[in-house]
Each structure stands twice: as structure tokens, then as C-alpha cells.
Length: 471
Ligand code: NAD
Image (cartoon, rainbow, N blue to C red; front, side):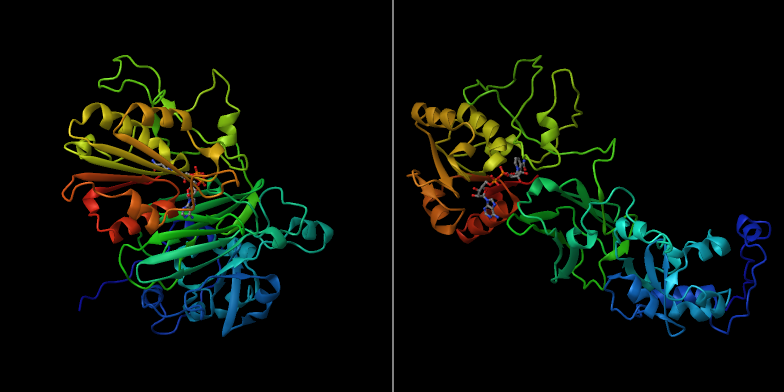
């Protein structure tokens, strides 16, 4: 074994040393060095006693954990169980006990502000301090609020606890589902913004003028296609993450800044990105490529969700205002339409938009094409985009057929009703000849698309015969 002399830490003259202000160090027992601590944290041992679950800690709860063998400390709003670390603490157990069951942020900053405690104590993380309404702090001037647990900005007049969303998570072998209870009726999917980059997961849910944030470094890698579902009536939001490796997660992740917080949203300068599929000016446009070489227009259909976060701003744009456009994204290739004999388009709501160019292109360019059928699912008659144009096209073009299905029809509606289902699809999506070359395109709200893909599989269509558009 090599005998390597341990380097002095902090290095002589380093900032850490200069800032230490002569704090006393106590001799540590054998096997209690920093390396031993790192080894212990990587051993997979449950250091919090919570089996990986993160909890919200109230002030009353924090105070209870004030003994050496049960010692919780709050630093900048995050609560750690430091009992396992006691014997490894270079400043000694007594020093650490000064913060037992309380907010140790000030003490920590006085003694060793430079220490990367988030990383050092990450396996000891118990959770976050429960958000406290500012009104309480204002009423009680004597009482100093705990560091990091007050909301950063204006809070609602109601006690935050009553309206603040909460979350939970569970897992199967391949999926992790985060459930957020917004306590808000009539939520829509526009109020959910999800982002995943470099292992960091961020979900923002907009509830009236407030924003609930989940921000965490996930404990394991996930795939990029994240699905969010909103149950409008109850305000329950489910975010479904697909695991990269089918291993069991002990905990969701390590909280990052503002994780599990509920603050006034619409900070100035916030950038929101949303994909839209360009359409044509109308279904009767002549689509023989190339388009006019110096074409300067892009047409998009934008549905305004009045309680949404993003589209109401679009609604207020004036001529002369700017929006930034990214490069095009997507994975549909025109070659998928080559040699096609039958094309089926299953669209729900604004999921109709990718169908516009496909429909036009196929009718104008694919010589073998015998049939194009569009099944268009909407809530109400008013929601049917381009209904007149679609009906006119069906009258004019014998290869094209359209069917409207409403999920929330009035009693006057004599057409089909319901949501995507096996009986509907088995009648509609049928090869006219046994070996017809078919393509089925599907686009709409994520649950619609997912269900459609499953049903088409049950109807024995192959993966190559189905193309789904996901936002
Ligand atoms: P919507 O809420 O008005 O619903 C339209 C229809 O979708 C309903 O009538 C119903 O038949 C079906 N539907 C809705 N929820 C369902 C569920 N849980 N299970 C089964 N069927 C369901 O739709 P909208 O507000 O117009 O939303 C359209 C969606 O399409 C948006 O999520 C949008 O992001 C997506 N979209 C995607 C793309 C793309 O990927 N390129 C393009 C446009 C739109």
C-alpha cells in the first residue's frame, strides 16, 4: 500500500484558512476523517432514517430533534439530520449541537461559510422547512423568522399553507410519477412548464398569480420525453418521467434553489418557450413545393387559454411587437409519405395543426394515394378548427373523408361523440385492401396520443405505420 502524506486542508494561506478565525478543531476518532465520511455517504446507508423520502419540516418538528443521537439542523431553509456526521465534524460535536433543532444558518456562516455543505451533507437531507406565511412573521416582531423559509416575494392574503400546492412521488419499474396537488380547480395544461437539463428537473405550476416550483437534481437519469397530465376538475398534475435505467430510486433528488416553493410569478424577463407547428394560410393553398421562393409568412394556429400563463400574452401582442422563433424542430420526414396508399390522421384539438401540411402535401403529391381520412376529436362544435374548409375539401376531393367526434357536445349534435376508443378506431382506421401501405399520424393532448398509440398496437398496426407528434 502506498503511504501518501495527507495534504494540509485548508491549504496554508488559503481563503478558508484566513476566514476560519481561529476556530478550534478537536481531535477526531480513528476512522472519522473526511474521507471516511465521504465513504459512509456513498455506502448507500440510510443516514436520515427516512429511507430516502424528503419531508416538509415544520418549526415545531425541527425543535424536537435536538439531541446528539437525533439532531436536525436547518441551513438556508433545508433541514439536515446531522447526527451521523457528529463524530466526523472537525469542530467537534458540541459545536454542532449549538444548532441542534434550530436554524444554524447564521452560526454556519460565521464559522465556515465556504464549506459546500449541500454536497457534504446531501445524504443527510431530511427535507425543506415548511413555507410560513409572512403575515405570521409580521404579527410577531419578537420572533425572528428562520432563514430561507420565508417566501421571497409577495404572498397571498390567505395562509399560504391553505393554498400552497404539495407534491408526492411514486415509482414503477420503468416510470417515476410526480403528483402535484395544486388545490386549484379548472387548471389547464398550459399552466405546467417542465424542463430537464443536465440531470436537473424543474417543474413550474402556475396557480393564479403564483408559481409553485419543483426544482431538484434527480437522483437518477431519465429519458427526455416527459409527460404532464392535468386533471382539470381537481387540479391534480401528474408528471411522468421515464427512467433511463430500470432501477429503484431511493429518493427523488436533491433539492435545488427554490425547490417546493410557492411565490408570486411573472418575474420580469422570464423567457417562455413553446413549440407550434406551422400551418398553411388555408386548406385550399396550392402546396406543390417549392413554396414561393421568397415566402415571408409563417402561419400558426394559436389557441388562447384564458387562464394560461403564455397565450394570454400572445393575445395582447400588437403589430410591431417581437417574438423570437427558434429553428424548426421535429422528426417527421416527407419520405414517410412516399408510396403510401392510405393515410389516416387522428387529431385532437390543436393537434390538428401538424395534419394540415401533411394532408395537403399527400393529396397533391402522392400519386398512389387512394384515401386520406381525418378523425378530428374536439370538446365542442366551436372548437373544431377549419370545419368549413374541411367539409368543402371532403366535397371536392373524393379521396378525402373527415369525421368529427365531440367529447362535450350539446344535445343538438347528431355526429359521433366520445373520446378515442377501440370501437371508434377499429371502424375508422381500416385497410381497404389487405396489403395496403398505410400511415397513421396522431397528435393531440398527451393522454390522447398515448392511448391512441396503444389502441393502434392492439389493432395490429406496426410501429413504422404509426407516427405520433409530441409537443
Ligand atoms: P382539448 O383539451 O380541447 O381536447 C381536445 C380533445 O382531446 C378532447 O375533446 C378529447 O377528445 C381529447 N382528449 C383530451 N384529453 C384527453 C384525455 N385525457 N384522454 C383522451 N382524450 C383526451 O385539446 P387542446 O387544448 O386543443 O390541446 C391540444 C394538445 O395538442 C395540446 O396539449 C398541444 O400541446 C398538443 N399539440 C401538439 C402538437 C405537436 O406535437 N406538434 C401540435 C399541436 C398541438
